[in-house]
Length: 230
Image (cartoon, rainbow, N blue to C red; front, side, top):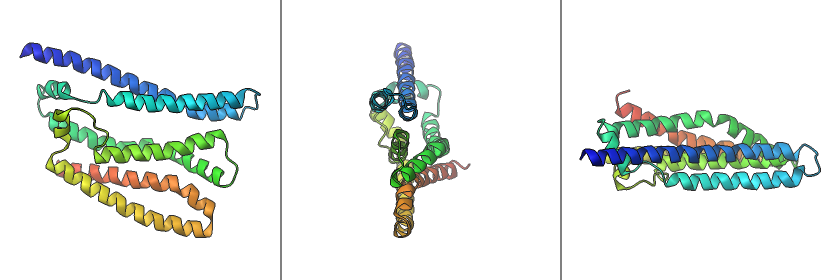
């Protein structure tokens, strides 16, 4: 039994290192996108083609890092190692809920830049940086919603059981219902903006997607905190 636990610990260390490496590559890919926009605006003769190449590489690295990270999500070895410490289910669920609450706060600046980019695009004043930033907001919102829905967990069956008990499934349903309500109200507001100024409606869409996803994440965190007596 001790040999199996030691092997599980070794596998867990390897998984964690590879997951951090995938996260680092994803960060480099995201950094390349605004750098491509800055390169485009330098006026250098080779700036525009190099900016396009850098932007394509950045998007490719982000997509590849997400796919790679999906292979190294927590799995049965993680469960075995953490169960040896005790109370792993509660720790996993609490960590997930806190992540859903913090992610909207850490993404505010990128969404703000995406909203500015959408405004410039709608007014015909867009640069490459505007296009790259406006693409980030939907990606952030979709990832946050996928976390609420549990679609990001591609671990084995033992790991899925930790995050799919009856209580957490009820949290998901409630959080996604809140997101649907926020989206419907937001669409009415955006429709009104579109009747007034179409470019304002376009600029508001990244924010609407972000607010919808954030409402789901914060509602999930609120329910988890209430259930734990916090």
